[in-house]
Image 1: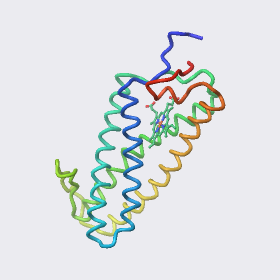
Image 2: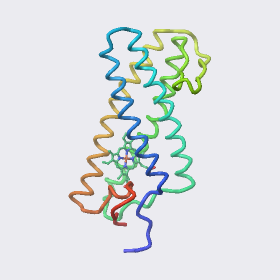
Image 3: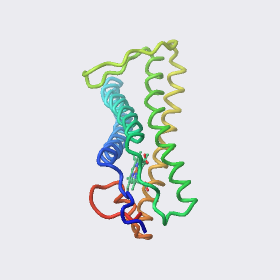
Image 4: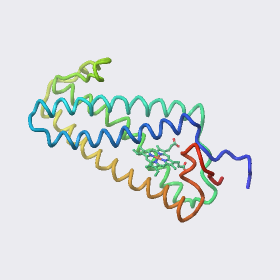
Amino acid sequence: MNLNAKTKYSGLAMLLHWLVFVAVIVSWRIAEGAEEAATREARGEIMANHFALGIVIFALVALRLVWRQISPPPPAPAGHAGWERTLAKSVHLAFYALLLIMPIAGWIAMSSYGGTISVWGLFELPRLPVPANEALGEQIFETHALAGKALLILIVVHTLGALKHTIFDKDGTLFRMLPFGTAKG
Ligand code: HEM
C-alpha cells in the first residue's frame, strides 16, 4: 500500500458535494410541497424558490466540474471491484448530466411559458428566445419531473454504494468525501 497516496477529495470538492446534496433535497421537497398549495398564486410563489435553487445547483455543479480539472479526484480505492468502479463512474456521470440539463430544461420550459426566472430578486435570468408554446413547456416540465425521479433513484444507489463500502467492506469510502476519518487507498 502506498501510504502517500491521496485518498480524499479536496476541501472545496467536499464543500460543493454536500452543498449540492442539500440543495437537491431542498429543491425536491419544495417542488413536492408546491403540489399541496391552496391556490395557483401560492404554488407560483413556492415554485419560484425551486427555480432559483435550480440555478444555484447549476452554478455549483459547473464550479465543481471546473474545480475537478484543477484538483482531480483521488484514485479509486484499490479494493473496489471493476464493476463497482464502472457503476460508480456511470452514476457520477449521470449526476453531472442531470444536474446540468435539468435546470436548463426548466429555464427553456419557463421561457416557452413566456416567463423569466428570478434568483430571489438578486438577478433575473431573461426569457430564452424560444417560441411561446405552453404545450411544449408542459412537456418539458413533465420530462423534468421524470428526470427528477431518475435522480432520486441514483441518489439511493449512490448512497447505498457509499454505505456498503464503508460499513461492510470497512474501507472508509465515505471519508473520501468528509474532512474527518480515514479512507483506505
Ligand atoms: C444529491 C445527492 C448526491 C449527489 C448529486 C452526489 C454526487 C456525487 C458525485 C458526482 C460524486 C463524484 C465526485 C467526482 O469524482 O467528481 C460523488 C462522490 C461521492 N459521494 Fe455523492 N452525491 C450525493 C449524495 C451523497 C450521499 C448522501 C453520500 C453518502 C451517504 C455520498 C457520498 C459520496 C462519496 C463517499 C463520494 C466519493 C466516492 C468515491 O470517490 O469513491 N454522496 N457524489
